[in-house]
Figure 1 (cartoon, rainbow, N blue to C red):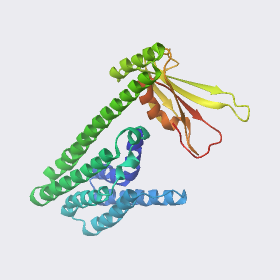
Figure 2 (cartoon, rainbow, N blue to C red):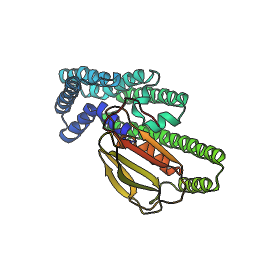
Figure 3 (spheres, one colour):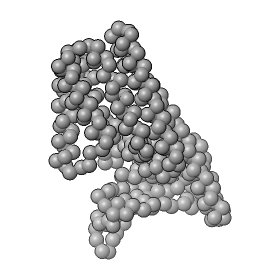
Figure 4 (cartoon, rainbow, N blue to C red):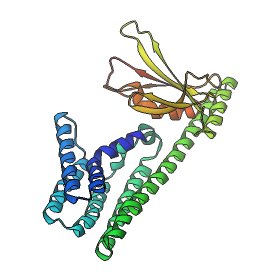
Length: 309
């Protein structure tokens, strides 16, 4: 979730600043000038950092500069009302690219949701953009600015929020079902009563996920004779009360150092790739712990570049 929101925020930062500045000042010039400045600054930052610029980022920058300049030149409220249609149609065109959505999804979704479903969801978003662009076109040409402002502020944003929530619910259900099936397969393969008890405990926790005390978390270190100790982040089922907890740049709700619920629980070790860290896989680890596994993510001082699970 946080990865998706972070990427979306970066890609649409200039557009967000435009609406914020325009809402505060009521000035098209101020909003457009700030949006152009933010867009160009983002572009320069990525270039100086040597990072790749995604197609969506190129699109947003181009729209901000071209449409922003046109807004400054025309000073026309009607043109400002038509701009969202141009933006929605352009974004829809980019969303027709196969697999565009993968960049905005965490690893647990890409791993557990079929590719065809992700691609289909991307096309559905493209369709939504076309519908919103066409609706804005009608409102901008047939109605006054008050109705247009209501549509942009509530109608268009509300439709996107609703679509996001539906997608989140569908993906979450599919992930939970796949993890539950994987747990059942572990039971059949192990055949051990102690393993069965651990998996059953995990399924109980999975069924009651979302409440406090579902996942425990602790950090530890493992000695390495050939180098520095390995830093371990550990997630596991727990009945202890959970609370918000910061893990690097991420926020998770866990029971820090809470007691482990169950015994003989299946173990999964997560190893990051070059330049990564254990916390970058926190969302995958949370889902695994929620399904009844003990998930251990290792931060290594030297990596091979391969990410293994």
